[in-house]
Length: 478
Ligand code: FES
Ligand code: FE
Image (cartoon, rainbow, N blue to C red; front, side, top):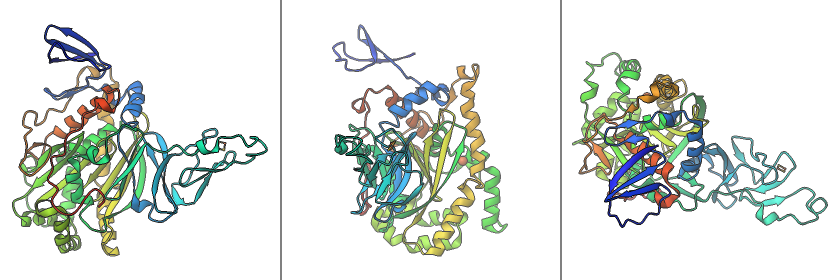
């Protein structure tokens, strides 16, 4: 148990579940979780290993937050379905005959059997394989064997449909859902992060197509990969050093010049509000951006990107289309992506295991041969056996496992990089450290986790206001 102190007026109204004591003008708030010191940048190791904490976060984080559950391109046709998860709960994403998208708990209302066993498919109805109760893809219980004979016609069929999520909404074709009726709108939840999401996902009229997912398990806590994608550019030069050298040699056909100091490169680490984070570089001139892209992409993809620039600029404005480059991103808690097209859904599987679902995002309107090239380029680096992917997993595993040691547990993690250097940026929303390397996004993410874990309900969870200037025609619905 830790203490958080703040000076407030003696007449403060106390409405919290926290134990609060008033001493003169000083209020001492005793809250359950105080896992991060935002002044020193230190972090408790228990949150990566504790079974009890894990069970609580399934309820308080995954049971409340807007979670990314799928994409409309995964269920393009009437009656398509896609099996996904919200935390550890299996969820069926369906598109009904009229085209409307739904999400239901994959659980039969009779004895609890899972209704859908396939990863995806096309079906108007789902029959439970245990006793045969059958549900429509709109969630209604439409058939019960022996309804008249065995149940005397008395079963409350109308109230035994599949359990729906509390809210479902989409951003640019990405489907999000929450179990919590009190959750704010998806637009508020994404907040300023949408400014950065648009750069990858909302730049074309036709939207994106998600391929995949590849699925695999790794032994680490789910927060490690989410944290890594939110703000850990720092590991790149070391963890991925050899892969970077190989890639540069390959793309330059052996003519790569001397490697610049990776710690002196320009850029910004951003805590984008509401626990989300990313890396963004803003260049003066568009040509600088193409220089960077040219070193890292197949020439055919660079040419294609140049050809679609006018449309991108019209949709997301000059700054985001021509002068910014984002690399790594996390929408708290379960969605991450890299600018090379890999998009991640993190599914917790116990305190020490996470199931990774890796998709590849490709412009829907790109020609097929280029779609193939985009997929290859992404998977060579970040597929399950990608050159870069394999560098990460063992580091995440070890970082989390330190929390099991009775000795190591006494020494908190250090996430202090760039602390005290957060500042507003004239072009970028969020709290920005104007360096390529900083841990501002991770501090934002763990602080958000703590807010969720200490809150009694959504009423206790603050929402950061939207401050971004959204130039261009792209909106929430694409
Ligand atoms: Fe599904 Fe009995 S458990 S019909
Ligand atoms: Fe990495």
